[in-house]
Image (cartoon, rainbow, N blue to C red; front, top):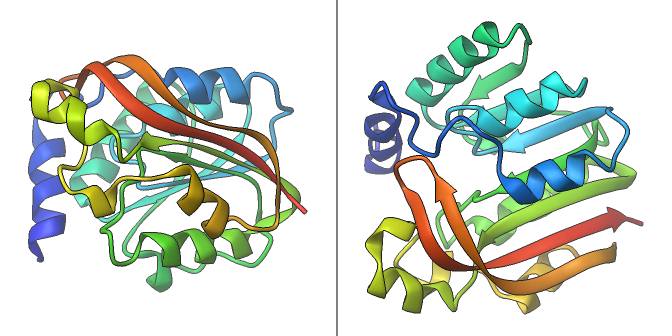
Length: 206
């Protein structure tokens, strides 16, 4: 098992939810505007966002590299009387199909710097025409915030953080519904607490 996988397994192993049981606020706000259809959650961890979507009636698929995250998410789904399809592995090993999804939600899906753009481009293929990307993750400016307050969480290397320019480059064939860098207050479980800087993006595939 590589260090990256081990790190997330260790984080998700404990009884408490690393990022809480409530869905991310931005995701919640966006999903409530849409009619439920099929949605993919990359890097979904313990399942808080996937389970929220399933409770709204979405047909939910998710993946992560952490088996511990999946175990916890499936228990959480059962406790909420919903079912989700949750795979474990790296994206290129999973058998998603072209244009399978109506929406893809990237919520703090911080993949290693050297592959993050490549993953965005792969995910693009799985989204159908007119499908929606919902994205929230830490911006490059966040480095200043996490230096002041470790409790806010997020990567500590600039390459793993996002810029508006990167999002435009990674998702070129999208109608931009919303794209901004914003300072927000986070209160999500054990690892996202305090003021941070994020990129928020909602785009429709042309």
